[in-house]
Image (cartoon, rainbow, N blue to C red; front, side):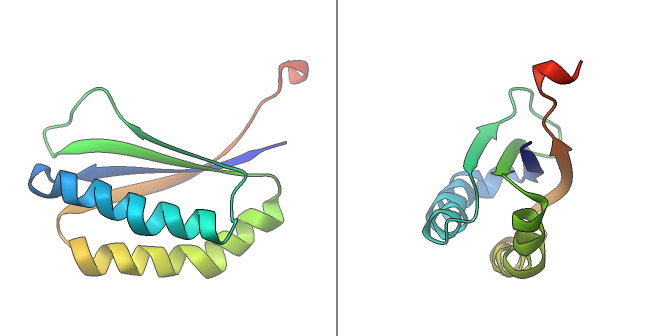
Length: 105
């Protein structure tokens, strides 16, 4: 069973390009360097919102223990870095998804 930690970001258009670069250079690089996830999917939502451009970051974990470690130790560090640089220029919300296999239904 895979667990997906999804964060949706709405980013002010004035910082969009710089924000994407920052996420790639620091957040995604940090995740890969520390081998924290099984997979990473960074996407742009096709429909724009009046508030800004919308992006989704999905992090795939192979266990609840791996997710818990990420949530307790690593996520606060990354949230602080993003907030320091882009406070008041983005908002985000997260949800935890559990993959449903074909054999379950």
